[in-house]
Amino acid sequence: MNRLFVILPFLFLLLRPASSNAQTEAGSLVWFTDLNKAIDASNSSKKPIFGFFTGSDWCGWCHKLQRDVMAKPAFIDWAKKNVILLELDFPRNKELPAQLSQQNNELAKQFKVTGFPTVWYFMASKEKSGKTNLNPLGSQGYPSSAEKGKEEVRFLSDAAAILSENRK
Image 1 (cartoon, rainbow, N blue to C red):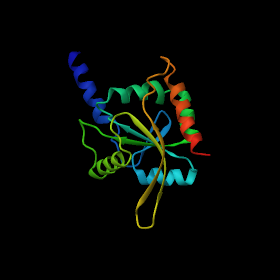
Image 2 (cartoon, helix red, strand yellow):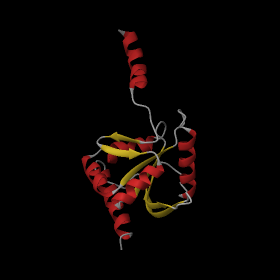
Image 3 (cartoon, one colour):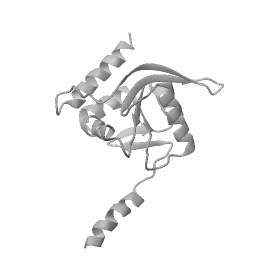
Image 4 (cartoon, one colour):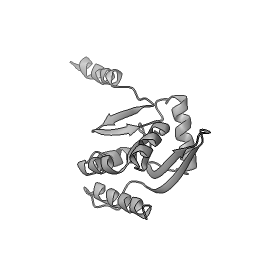
C-alpha cells in the first residue's frame, strides 16, 4: 500500500498533458503561451492581452493569485468577456522550449518585470517585417490590500480601472 502512495504522484506527472506553445484550457479559460497566437486572438476580438508573468513551479504568490483570484467564477467570467490570457512562465525546475523561454525573457525585459506575479495589460500588433509593437495599458500584482476572501473583487476592480482608463 505504501508503494502505491509513492508511485501515484509520478504517474500523475507522466500522464498529465505537456505544456506547449499553443494554448491550454484550465478551468474553462483559454491560456496562450505563444505571443503571436495571443496577438492574433487579441486583434480579432479587439480585447487586450492579459500577460501573466509567473514562476509556475516555485512562486508562492503566483499560486496564491491563481487560487485566490484566477480560479474564482467572477474572474473566469470577467476574463472570458474582457481579455486574451497569455501565460509567461519562468520556471526553475523545468526547462521551457528555447523559443518560449526567449519570448518570455524578452517580454519581461520590455515590461521591466522585477517580481512575480506581475500582470501586464497590453495591446500588440505585428508589422509585415515581423516586428512586434506593444502598447502597454497598465499592470498589477497580487491584491495584498484586499479583504481576506475578497481578493478577486479587488483585483477585478483594479483591472477594470486600468482598462477603462485606456478606453478614454
